[in-house]
Amino acid sequence: MKKKKKKLIILIIVLVILIYIMPRFVSTSRYVYNVIYEHYLASKDFYFTSDKLTTNHTEYEVTNNWSGAESYTIPVTMSSKKNDMAFTEADIEYTITCSSSSNISATLSKTSGTIVGTDNSGSNTDYFNVVIEPAGGTALPNGASAWVEVVATATSPYHHTISGKLIVEVGAEDITYEIIDSANSPYLIVNITNTTSSTANVTLTYDPDDVLLDMTSTFYSQSTGNTTEQINSYTYLNSISGNVGSLSVTSVKFYKQDPSQNYSYSSGDNIVPIIGLN
Image 1: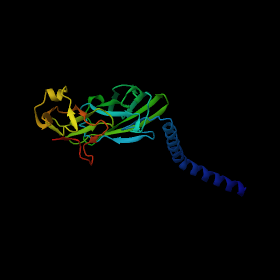
Image 2 (image 1 turned 120 degrees about the horizontal axis):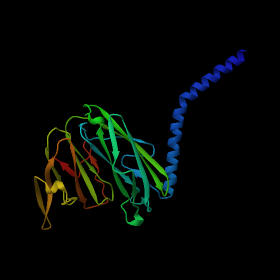
Image 3 (image 1 turned 90 degrees about the horizontal axis):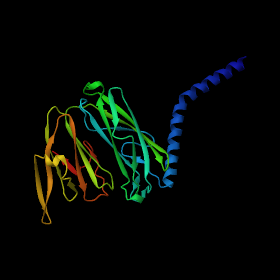
Image 4 (image 1 turned 90 degrees about the vertical axis):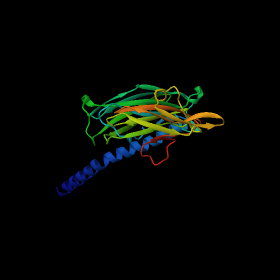
C-alpha cells in the first residue's frame, strides 16, 4: 500500500513538472523547427522576409508617436532577397491577414501580393500598408497602446509563414518622420507624421548626390519654399518645405542615386538619416 502511495506521489510530481515545462518545450521545438525549415528553404534559394515580420513572430514597436485620434498608416516591406548574392529568382505569391486589439480597427491595403523575382527583372520587393483607426471613433488617451497581428503566408512556389505584432503607443503631440526603403529599391518614401492640433510647416534637407525629389509629388507642387545648389553646371534642389496637416501623415517620394543602398530610418534611430527634417 505504501509503495502504491509513493508511486502515486512520484507520478503527480512528474505530471506537475511536465505541465510546467511543456509550453516552453513546445515553444522551443517550434523555434528549432522554424530555423531548420528556413535553412531548407534557403537551400532552394527561397527567401520570404519582411522589415516587420519574421518566421518566429516579432514584436515590432512603431516609433512614431500617434495622437490616437486619426487614422495611421504602418507600411510593411516584403522581400525575396537575403543580400546581393542570395535572392529568389521566381515570383512569390503570398496572402495577408490581420487582427487587432479591441481599441482600434485595422485594415490592409491589400490581402494578397506578389514579390516579383529577378528572373522577371523585379526588385525582389513588394509593399502593403496596415491602416489603424480608433475603434468607434473615440480617440485613445495619451499613453494608451494598441496592437495589430499581421500574418503573411507564401503560397507559391513554396509555403512559408511569417508574422509579427505591430505595437503603437499614443504619445505626446509631436512631428516625427520615418524613411521607408530597402536595398535595390529605386526610390524611398519619407512619411512625416504630425500629431499636433495644428498644421505644421516642415523642411526636408538632403544631398542631391544621394537622392532626388520626385517632382510630380503633391508636396513639391504645394511647397512653401526650397533651396538649390549647383552640381556640374546643373541646378538641383537640396531642400523642400511644405505643410503637413494636423493629425495626419504626409508621404514624399525620393529617387535614389544608388539603388543598392538601404536608407531606412525612424525618428529616434541612433543613425544620421540620409534626409533630415527641420
